[in-house]
Structure formats: C-alpha cells, structure tokens
Image (cartoon, rainbow, N blue to C red; front, side, top):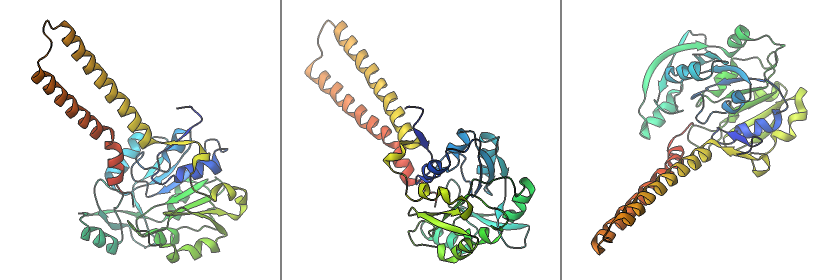
Length: 302
C-alpha cells in the first residue's frame, strides 16, 4: 500500500473526513470522550500514528489500561464525563463492546437484546475541569469527539464551548444501536456556541467553529473514493489471505513432491481421499479469510 494512502481505523470513516480537513496540521491535538479501544474502530488512532496526541477519556478499566500501554503520548483520563455534581457514577459496563453506558434506559434496552452488563462505580468529571487541568484556552483543540452511548447531552452540558473552542466537533447523534436521531436533546447549545453543522454521516454530526469556517467544505461529505484511503479491516483480511494462500501452496508442493517420489501412483480411492481433504482445507481457508469481516459485523461500537 503506498504511503500516501490513509489507513482508517474508524467504524464509519469519521477519521477520513477529519483527515481531509485537518491533514495540513502538524502534531495536532484531539480530545476524545468515550475513547473505547485504542485502535479497534478508533477515530483517533490514525491521527496518533501521524504524530498527533491529545486527551482520551475512558471509564472502562480494561480500555483505559490499554490506552496507557499503547498510546503513551496521550493523556488518559480514567473517568466518565457528566454535568452532575458528583464524584462517582454507576457505569453499566458491557464487557468487550463499545456499548457501556451511564444511561439506565439504554442499559435496560441492551439487556433486553441479550447484552449482559455489570455495574461498576467509576470516577466522574466535568469536561471543563479535565480541560482546565491539562490545557489552557490558548492551546488549540483541533477536534473534540464525543461518543458516550446516550449521554452526549450531559457531556456537552459540562463544557463551555465559548471558552474552549475545538475547531471541529464530532458528536454521535443517534440512539445506541439505532438509526433514530438523538441530536434534538443537545444541538441547540452547540449552535448557540457559534458552531455550524457541516455533515451528518448517518451516525455522527460534524460541526465547525465559526472562526474556522474554511474547513467547512472539507467536512461537508462522508468518506468516499476520492479520499484515497484503505481500512484496517480490509488490510488485515488481505494479509491473512496472503498468508493462507502461501500455506496452501506449501502443502500442495509437498503433496506433489510426495507423489513424484512414489513408485506407484495413488489409487483411485487414495486420490479421492486427497481431493476430499483438499476441499475441506479450502473450506477452512475460506472461513478464516472472511473471519475479520464477520468479526467487524458482530462487534458494535454504538
């Protein structure tokens, strides 16, 4: 893959859209609330690989630990963001997914769909306080990403967007595991802070600050072939396919060599047995080659 091809990790091409608008920025800064896994379906991973860094906020302990290990340049805040005046909150954790939530109704809905959860107490912070601790208002935030499974209104209510001015704001704008829009609960506050809607990609809404209106055109359409990008899922599937084909060729060469050395050609029964074994091997290889694609369909980020 040529170096100029952007490698996307995000589930819906959000990183492609952001890169289109912000690739001219060197060593930029992001803030990601609800960071989840540091690479799988991550919007910020490609930016980190390009030399960016930022503040990642993640309350699920296993994901927070992975961020500390795999993203050492980032500042990891292990907490849930809320506007409530509390020091801890109950997180409904659904292990191994991006569906963990602070919202009781969302957790109940997931449970009805077979997603078991466990309740854990996690630290609670206002986003204002997190930014105040780690940044000053004159340090640019090139984009702020909010993906918190139904708690977006509470996160936005905890930050003063007149004081902290991310160039671009990306907020998940549908109810978890649903195409039903949810932005009506919080968008008025974003617009009142002098942000303009640029794009709804079916999952998230992209806004640009008035003082960075020059980015609006680049943010106005979803990822497309003109962006010249690849996805991590497709890349990994191709690599596994190459490895498996190499394995098949190796076994085929061994079989041919064995037949060539044999004084007696294989009987019809032996040939039929070998053909059956080869067919079974091909079926197994096909299953393994498509495993990454099946895996991504089965995993959800919300």
